[in-house]
Length: 62
Image: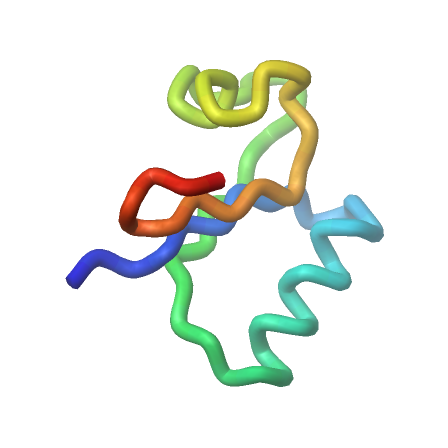
């Protein structure tokens, strides 16, 4: 089964909190660090404003 995908930016305080919560709760996710000036198209499809953090679940739920 594929893992949830967390799109994150290293210096974003909201993304930091999301990553810390994932570690604390011992969830397994695929972490995709993004460069905000070069956001991936797939992330923009699920987060049209281009904000992070964004968690994409295996069933497609955001």
